[in-house]
Length: 519
Image (cartoon, rainbow, N blue to C red):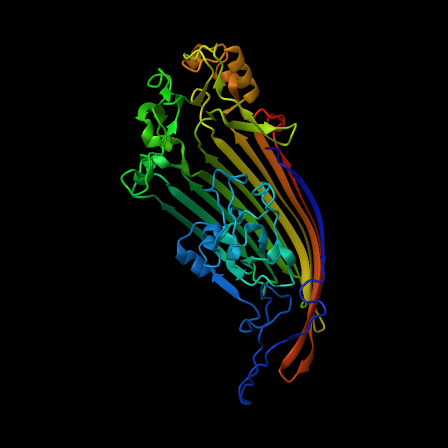
């Protein structure tokens, strides 16, 4: 199907309660003899008004770095996907039969990935280039380096005016390390009792400079992750694709070379030209004897994954009241997945550019076709093993740069920032069948279904490898101020105002082979 090009320009103003007054609880008075202590106020996800960390205004769950390490999870995506508020409609790279393969998102409260906002240090990231269902955009959590994370704040309330409709389900705010000094090397590896799915991770973090003493700090992190491909054939439960011994079970094999008659008849070459065996049709909810095969060795349970993530962050105190900061990050993720070869039946369909819908690729052999022994037109169930499995390579590259200033002017906290982020994705789809060449070959009797290597049209002429590419971009600028502006018996009155301008775009570019209807 054709993939849409989406363009959007968004201007958001009045961030975080502009014109709204917030009452903060009064603090307990210390005994006169006790020394006065300065209580630092921080910005909590969901509000631009700073407060002490004991003052909760919304349901914010905080996952600390120590808790992340104790989980044993190898990525930010796995940590977030295991929180209780991530209740449904959340997809990751395991969903291989997807319009958005190779990425991992989060869906708070089951309201969808497009309704869950993901931030880094309170600022946005570029969406993944492939939108789920061609329209649901979301951030790929696999692009966030675990080694740079200080904590993760999850706002479970979707009513915050700071973020608008992007955060109907809630907000996930990843806070990076800010004043780290020293060096850290980490790694992990694992396998499974049944073999396969080997997984390795290595990380390196280095920081120098003390904000309190040196008035600067620089942090750099590197994360490397690798996971092997896992197929259904590598697990006992899925290897046989046969659950008939259980109530409601079935033989989940696929018909590979069978004439669709009543009863159905297998091709004579079932055991030689095709990797199938004769199977009683009743086991496949059909009649007659079928030529079928076990697809387990072509079903991907976990795709192969290779990831590299780099991040650098610098902070400099320009004066006692002004701080400059900058962040740069880069990630390169690769994913590989397998799938069975292209099937053909009388009801197979392909994209029709004339209507924007689909058209039937008629898997019916004419009476005069050399592969038809019946003398009348006959439908077939066939799988193009000679063309090869429909494998896919997905490669995603992301980069992000943010810089800004923040400080204190009198009693007013202020901050300004600007940034750019981009994600580029390329998906190479291997071993698809060109439906125009196939349709002509069936009509001209030039593809031999009984012995594919003997036909005039062979797998080399049928095979096409369409490529899909997409680029997602984000440019933004924001500014905000906040302060306590008065006092009431219940406590001080706080005020915040802000402005944000951002421009987002996605350019999803399918291969001409797809838009022309070859697939």
